[in-house]
Image (cartoon, rainbow, N blue to C red; front, side, top):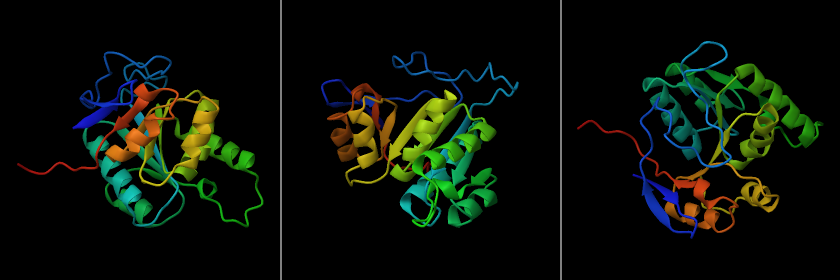
Length: 212
């Protein structure tokens, strides 16, 4: 079961469209890709998940499970991560295409400016040519959201932690809106208090399919 925010701040049950189907309606101002009209002739929706960590954590497991399930459902899901760690190796083992880019989470000694980091991520995303970009964790979001906007790509962001998200707060202050997913109820309720578009906030609990 997933939950979607009402404008008054409450949550209502929401049933996502089956994988591969285009929603019958779109939130105002949000452009969704049409899988039947790709410029390169590929009929599959191409989703790039971007995560700024590469170790063995909850967000990394989430991305691995989600990307694997999407590919099994006929979605062209790929992963962009920092380095050759657990996530990259696990994706390769499951047949999920993975790209690594250090500038997603550069070391403190890195001489590049934040603007230069965003420019690099913009180049990488342009080469991957996704239909949708899905950012996970604030370090990825802070670079991926402006990069996706520069490329004219729809972008979504998943909140994986109960901690205050400074990235989202900054985006909301300047009036930026994009779909935000929280894997826990409290996170969704917290985000919709400040979101310019509370109807774009979703609660989608972590979960996996189990055999009957």
